[in-house]
Image (cartoon, rainbow, N blue to C red; front, top):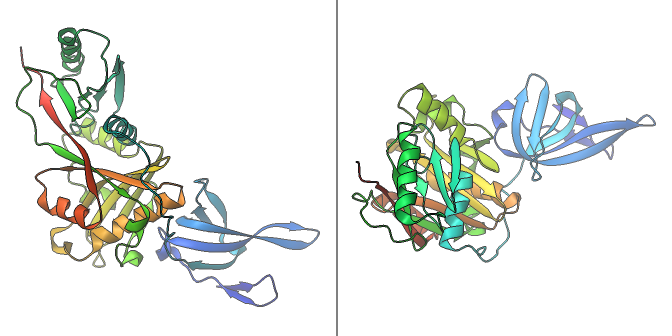
Length: 332
């Protein structure tokens, strides 16, 4: 597709529907004033190209849609580089609460400063009581209230214990595998590796993305809860590295931008595609989009015994801020 450039030269539309999910720059006719076209540029993620309508999401997150015939010039562009900046300030308590916003349970209720969370059993994070601060009751009464709340929903009473951050709670069951909460400056992640052209971004987790995500299961209620949790958060992006052979994606990832922080989660790579740089490429593309929206810091949660993932995040520059674990209330 070739159009007339504003200066009278020739301009080319060098993108097509296969570029959906990539970062692009598009010049289009936005209006006609006194018989003359007014041109506007938009840079952002090519979110869709349905029928004859093109939609681009720029850095302010407000989608820009226009008929394809109004495009004068278009091309894919490099990742947004981000700006070097120190990590935003956030102590363990603040980061844990931030993570709750980026992985929001279907149902939430406050018990003083504690947060009760339920999502039909989909992940411990969305089905546990985040014990931070003062519950507003003596500890035995607070734990009894937690037990009743989860029992009413057919769920075990599980407490999330943050170290440091949570009060000392005696008499809980054996702890689940501890998790590390790690942070890193965002901008260096964008420059961590290559292969960006293989990655596509989307605002929703489509069937392909979900086919690679291993945590979904447990019946229709849990699957519906999973989709609600995954799509919750201030500004959510899903990354996919498609399989050229047409199978399930080779890698996926998720990022939620919340002010100065970007929360990375659900990073998964097919066994046959590991150690090929795809996980690094996905992280870079997600980091670039988060930086474009103004974030400067990244954080993630990883199980302490996941040696492969921990090694990857070490290479990317993540360091441990704090730890947390889950423990069940004693069954009565």
